Amino acid sequence: EVQLVESGGGLVQPGASLKLSCVASEFTFSDYWMSWVRQTPGKTMEWIGDIQYDGSYTNYAPSLKNRFTISRDNAKSTLYLQMNNVRSEDTATYYCTLTTEGMDAWGQGTSVTVSS
Amino acid sequence: DIQMTQSPASLSASLGETVTIECLASEDIYSNLAWYQQKPGKSPQLLIYDANSLQDGVPSRFSGSESGTQYSLEINSLQSEDAATYFCQQYHDYPYTFGAGTKLELK
Image (cartoon, rainbow over all chains, first blue to last red; front, side, top):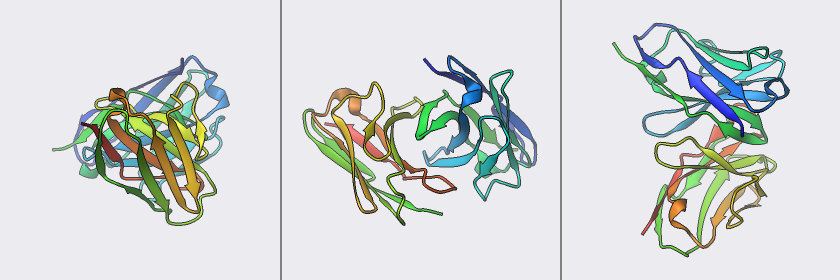
């Protein structure tokens, strides 16, 4: 069974940077596109972006493109989300997902709270 | 961006009933639509992809359909474990977008 385990969340101050990780197992990580999605405290789902299987191509939500960066290390089966200059509206649970047609599998999520 | 208007926001139904949840896309998304189920405190799970294809392991009482830019999720013979929030998501064009969700309560 596909396993996706996110980490790196926590309480951060506005303007800080944070890097989330997602370790994948039980599938060939390097064969798949991966995505990050977040869910606000009000339960709104927002797609953040995705990355091609070899890391050569990424897509982002326009509103986040200038602050968030998605990367991957296929040797470590790990997906990353670098978040810079975080704002209160970035408070959410962040999920990594295995992406084919739709998002086939989701991690358990990691919670990020932006507050001073 | 493609807007996904999901309705209703919430509904209440009894065991054994059939319910339908709808998503209206603001433009043609060519069946590139997924449905997810999210139970309280849990991560979303894929139910349906390509508008009407059932994900492996999902009970056959779940089905998807489309009519133009209107997409529907039907749940037949409601079971207690179907109490959850359901989301639609289009993956036809970037940025991918979600519906606002439908919270299904069992009476």
